[in-house]
Image (tube, rainbow, N blue to C red; front, top):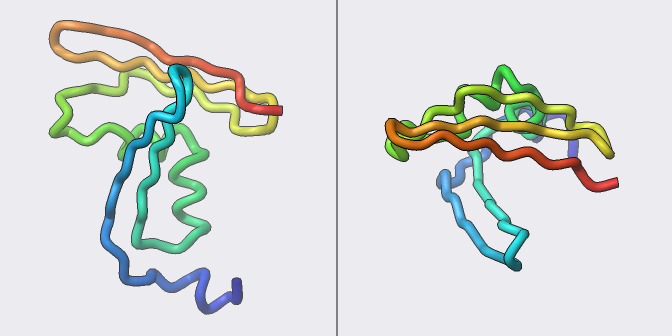
Length: 94
């Protein structure tokens, strides 16, 4: 990708699709109108991820977010609603 294209936002609809691949695998695909560098940072820096991952309309709160996005790293997210609290953690693929 050349320098000009990376820094320019391209017109696209912000669409999200969710596909269950198996009992343990869920693939979420989201198109974002923004430079690849900024989108990558939003996915890999916990302080940025915390701001956008859970839409307010879902009624969820992301209470904590820990991310080590290196190969073999781990992540842990803790969510809550007004009546339930749960967490998700996983080791990333090697």
